[in-house]
Length: 348
Image (cartoon, rainbow, N blue to C red; front, side, top):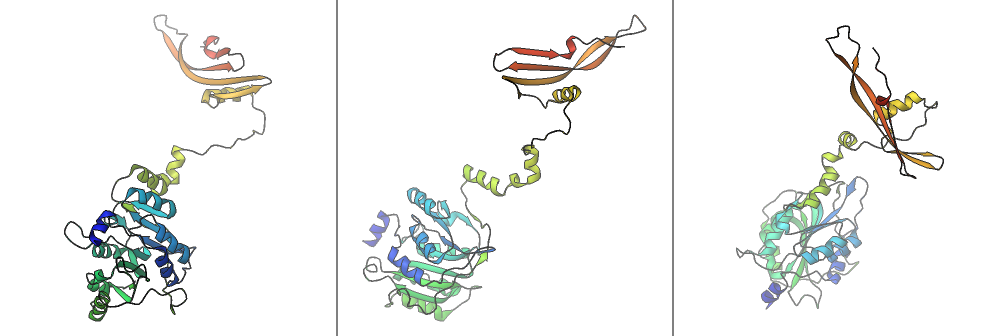
């Protein structure tokens, strides 16, 4: 019956809020900020409710991954960072997290391997040494992972769900602290194996833990947390955040900042205005003169003109610069063109 029920809900068994409250009471609230951070990750986040509730109690940035689309949308709305898809194929920074909250699917994969153990071994790398594992699984599944847990974690503790919540899947909560390096610990393995079948104490209530667990702090800043699947919008956001577009020298060339308006020390002469028009500074500028509004566009072009030649058989031409200004009266719609080439007389 449990197997059929697991298939019906896709292996999804959200952690009850009462259990999350008990767990939060056993962890010392994190102190962080400035140059350090505390990061919590849930690779099977569901709607994100459990991790959000835990973070509200102990603090820290929340990172969640969820495979089912509707649940992911909910998680993205409540967690600091969320990814859609399978956590087993996500790119996650090694040793980048203070706490691993793991309530994996209670099922087997296509190779008949327990998914609880698969998620545990795959996600352990996300924890930094000294980081806290919170592992929520059916009690009997502890035996499958006993050797791995004993070799990678120390300071182990295990409790069953409170009465009324334990009977359905006989779930337990295991705490462990990530070791600096894997070891072989036969005694710890035997202890975990005994927890898989023996009676366990109920989760402690708030205030009964003599030494609450502490979470390690990490250097503040970004941590690798992305999917292997290509998402154009996500890639664009990443490029804007840390790609080549963040280089000031490039962005200033492509999108120079707007120049502040300045007032010349002396009024501009006609010659100055002509130079500005020729250089294009007055292109598409709207000028105000009393009740009139004029749209100005200027251009400079070259024109070949004939000049004096001492040899009648030889024609000599010279290029001269011409300036043309078009003025549109925005009130009347009249257009006036002033072109220096129309009245200039060639000079030898």
